[in-house]
Image 1 (cartoon, rainbow, N blue to C red):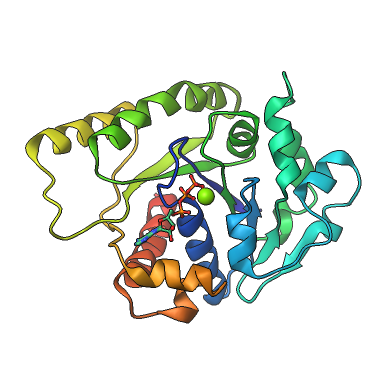
Image 2: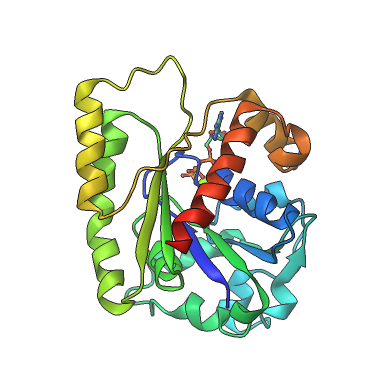
Length: 249
Ligand SMILES: Nc1ncnc2c1ncn2[C@@H]1O[C@H](COP(=O)(O)OP(=O)(O)OP(=O)(O)O)[C@@H](O)[C@H]1O
Ligand SMILES: [Mg+2]
């Protein structure tokens, strides 16, 4: 049975896609059977994976494709791709929250790990992603507004916890970290507060900034193939290990 992790935060541009795709590639390259799911109509994860899908997760939701028809192989992982129509689901009132979970039921057993890239909105797609998951992984930068933004996620997480008893926030990871960034006292307190309120941990691994990230994505390559020795790649490799350790506990 796969361990399923939704990489989530409603704030835009906090490395959700980068984190989901890079971790998928790292685990895949280590021999794990990995499925990456693109739940964002921006299709950034789909783009990086390099696949040109004929069928997408929208087709699966609409009943126009089976889940098997919509899963494509990329070099390190399988991918369930997105399309622009996914955005329509955000506009449906009372869309069932278990649409994704139900769609995935035939494939949970076939993978060791499922990573879900979620959109930057507290909507149906994020909710569906969380309900289908064992864990949420939250990437954020160390800026005051970003840390305050963690609060807005809490009611959604709480709703999921009520239904999925085992659901947990796996941890918060600081991204786009610059070694010259001074985590001042105020920011440290703010972060510690949020970590505690979410009943989770701050990962020791911090993801440093590196131009290789955007370059790799423009080339539709995973960071481990494009720049395996780059700072952000080394940091993601450390994070991948730390995640496994944390899940064992
Ligand atoms: N460690 C890093 N170093 C430098 N640039 C980075 C790093 N991580 C992400 N980026 C860049 O920051 C931008 C936003 O990253 P990404 O697309 O992963 O965020 P996101 O949270 O998925 O955004 P959205 O909310 O729009 O889905 C991208 O251009 C990406 O290349
Ligand atoms: Mg994204």
